[in-house]
Image (cartoon, rainbow, N blue to C red):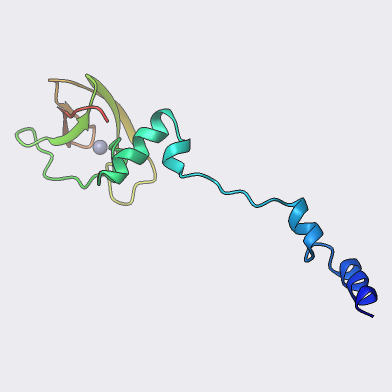
Length: 120
Ligand SMILES: [Zn+2]
C-alpha cells in the first residue's frame, strides 16, 4: 500500500519529492560587494563606509546662490555638467558646464561654484 501511495504522490507532485530536490540543487548568491567590480564596487564600499551619495548625483537644496555666496557643487574633476531647475514648477532643466575657479550664473540668476572633493 505504501508503494502505491508513494508512486501516486510522485506522479501528483513531481517537484515536492526527493527527485525534484536532487534535480534543482540549492545554490547561494554571494555577497554583492564580493561580486561587484569597478564603479559599482566603489559605490557599494562608499555606502558601507556611510557615504550614501558618493558620486554627488542626488538633487541638492539650493541656498541663496548669489554672486557673493554661490551654490557649491562638489566635483573630483576640474569641470562638471550641472542641471538647474530654474523655477519650482518648471518642467525643464537647464544644463551647463561648470569649470574650476570660474563661478557661473544660470539664466535664472542663480550662481554656482565648483568645489573640489576627493575622488571616491
Ligand atoms: Zn537656473
